[in-house]
Image 1: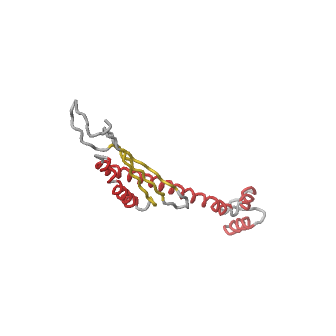
Image 2 (image 1 turned 90 degrees about the vertical axis):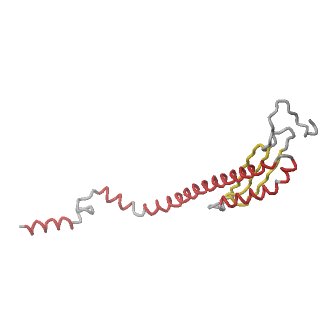
Image 3 (image 1 turned 90 degrees about the horizontal axis):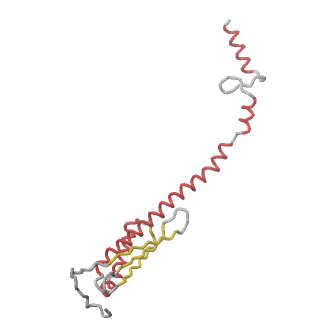
Length: 180
């Protein structure tokens, strides 16, 4: 009796009038029609989504490199200000150190940035004031490295007061300024 039951099931599975799913259950006509029309859709979805996703990843990496280059430029400018403000006791002292500070700032940017900032140009300036409050300014220009062919310029600056010794005196007058 057992063999006749098995053969009836086998015939029902092979019957063209009763479509079946991959698990041997009868399939509805809607699911079979939907499958035939969806062939190759995942390949097309991948072809559309993959380049967009890769572009998004590259843009995020490029933004990170740009902000890192800005950070390197700002830190280089701060380093230049730190060096230049120590030598600003007079206008001649400060202006005499501008070339050394320019070279040191550019070297610092190249070594710290590890290539993240290219085409580095530092511009240190001294703003000497006779009665004190002399200031130094360092501007660093450069370009961030690019993954996708963009030319992103970077410019950062730092400014600081010149360190000078001022003795404490309630009635001290500075006679070193020619124009008072």
